[in-house]
Length: 111
Length: 120
Image (tube, rainbow over all chains, first blue to last red):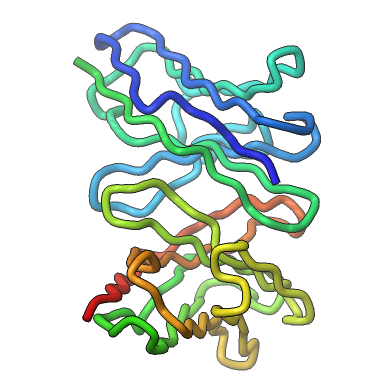
């Protein structure tokens, strides 16, 4: 199995851009889809990005994502930050043994 | 609309068993793989198990293998998680989620979760 490593927290000002990384420990990041979820306090996670870079229905175009084979990582970028973007963000993939893998989560603070 | 509703959570003593249910509505349940995912208090998400659309294939996280059993009843649009030999570290909110399309491991949507507390 592999690990997905995210920074525990990031913070940025309203209107700015922030990027959250998700680094795969072994095997290629491109081997299996990476999905991104947003979880606000007291709520269930919801999809922001699926299948590496597809924005989910209703998610603003300010959200984008990509994968980078050279760094073996995925990234979620949020531009034009709003206070409503404050939440925990999780990357997630799966292995060839049909087991899901989550990153540790990143708390985004918009201050 | 697509809805998932978990039930069955509660307080249970270490070593005992508990069964969770996930009732699905708004989609053709028998066409989709389904997952359980948990979140310990104040912690991150942990994938627990998956069952394929026909119930014939099941896979588990190493942390629960041999203790938890996932199952489904497509006639009742319901998935289950039978948890045995429970440990304090199994304390978590348990979510069920639909796999959006087979093989994607994309969880969408999620239920509201049910809290399991393992404590004496």
